[in-house]
Amino acid sequence: MTAPTLSKRYGQRTQRKKMSAAFWYTLAALGVALGVAFVLWVQISSQDKPTARDVGFTLTSVNEVDVTFEVSKNPEDTAVCALKALNPSAAPVGWKEVAIGPYADENGNGISVQTVALRTLGEAHTVTVDSCWIPEQK
Image (cartoon, rainbow, N blue to C red; front, top):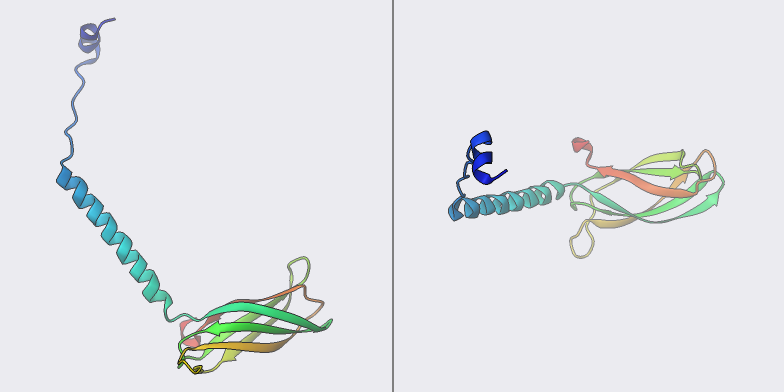
């Protein structure tokens, strides 16, 4: 079949209008603006949340571990951090919520290292900070 025969049978192929360059520049600028707004929103919303980093733990007995962790928060805030001890099957064998009061180091930062004794129901193979929060924001 030739092209004229196909066009008679199926009709003429319609030509799409090309989008102008201004449309694509506007779309790109809008995408960049939305990306910047999203990054700023994430940064601003996470500034007030305390964060924790596991430092280590020491088994003091079968039923107790000493947990060391670092908390970063606003110096004037009181934060609560939940500690979790797990056995080899990853089942929780210990849980404790620890309040960390207002604190500022010599540079005015709210970063502190905490060591807490955590009682367990059995031998813990790993201990971690589950989460931290400001009590009014939980």
